[in-house]
Image 1 (tube, rainbow, N blue to C red):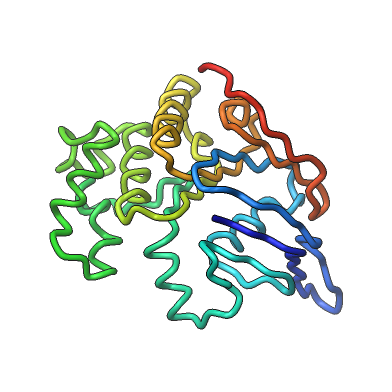
Image 2: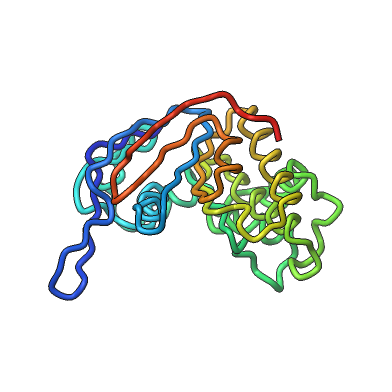
Length: 227
């Protein structure tokens, strides 16, 4: 599913080169549930941006479903982001004046998908929010807004879902509910990669990649602890 070989990212800051990612290598297979952890400045957010095709590597290779990402032009990258990658953010990133259903439908409209409303309804029902589909985000709880964001990420049936601190703005009980939903999706063979600083959250995934100073310092697969 994902192959990364000697992936590096160097930023120019003034007259200096600052390495944010330093030659990382790993593979992620279809259906894995992976947490990426590390202190501030470890490179985990840079890695997430590269995996999400939001930034270009300075060097190295990134393949997504055998597609060599660094060889694609901007239009092709936009298509990959729309069709193959689902994003879930800490701040939800929902349109405040659109209904939950309209927010979920948005990627389908960008992709000019037929029957977009019907597909969006199925996605929002999948996360248990069909009864709240016509409510705007301001009328929803934090947990409900994150479920809408997850439905939006799922709606195009992407190859992977990337989640950046998905429980960061939620209380502990709601955070556990969101992690339970991620586990249910993973049991349906959805590939999930999340960035988190919370060990309790990472412990609910099936694999933890630890980063420090732009390098992978540990990569551990394990059994999932019960919520």
